[in-house]
Length: 279
Image: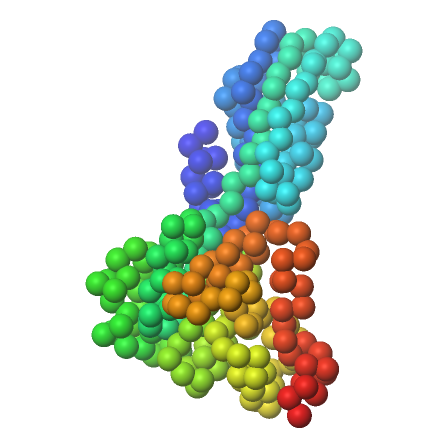
């Protein structure tokens, strides 16, 4: 069983989802023991067992659904003599299996260590995100300013990028001190697997940055997943209010909020119409 838990921890650290099935109750003769566990990975591969046969096949199917929906399920099986015979099992009891999703802790990579970033790190940490701060100024990117951060990187952005483990559970927020630094980070960010990429700035600024990167040869499609202007539209003005609006948007992405919360069509430069508006 320790192998199951070790693999679960490994998957979580790698940013991969999985589902854990556990026999939580049994009566009579069943092909395994109470607390037996089966781990199902995103690719469908498994580790451990709850007894094999059709029961395990049904649990595997349920686990795949649990991974997708991130909602747990409770399954009941009655292994009467006929079912046991069909399954090739010598048993005749009942069992209940609890299948729970295991999701990696989301990580917020905050580029820039100014006033907004300080509030972002605090609020995101409170909301369950591990925060990582990246800035090229050690006078700003330090433990005194960001005591809650999981990690702090002070150095040239291009030298830090290779150190960052970005995956589908990563959220990238670009709030550097200037247009050029924003562009340096965005150029790298659009090539990652990050689930969320947001950049501070007006629509005009964001489109200007993207146009410059397009001239460098990056395809327009690479930028369509960017959330900008970043944050939900709540009329935010102060650093704290802006941070709340951004973290709220991150939560909406994390929880797969239903369409209508303004994530739809957030990409201001995805169509020619938005470009024409600036001409």
